[in-house]
Length: 86
Image (cartoon, rainbow, N blue to C red):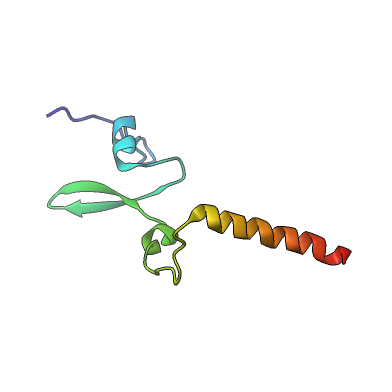
């Protein structure tokens, strides 16, 4: 098994190799958790509160036709623009 190696700095910092960052979907500024398990350290991405709660609440009315929704939005915007002119 090909295991990427990295060196820890005096400050205890390590660089997560690019292939591992990609496979975990990590980007600059993302948070990770270090979990010690049976003498090994595991790195896990920490999802934001938004990501953790995504899908927890269902929409009341899910639009079936997005083109119709767009048309209705355009009509509402046009009505708002014309209203002061009346």
